[in-house]
Length: 95
Picture 1 (cartoon, one colour):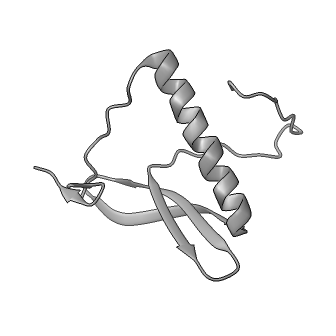
Picture 2: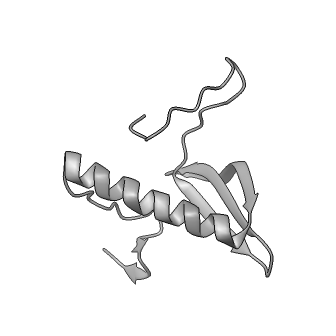
């Protein structure tokens, strides 16, 4: 990975999962990030990971993600955002 730090993990201790589905919930004390996948023609939403964190760490995650996307675009070019299965991107309906 292209990060400042490589974080070693014992073999078999982490699992790599593909995700194209994201849900975020929150209350006064925590954020809940859910990751999963869905595929065209399959109405089932498959949630495989749930992360609960504090609002402070949610901001840190957002900052890191924004910096990583900026670095990615600098290296590979602008990301072309895909239309979601429901036809909505950024709250705007697309055809």
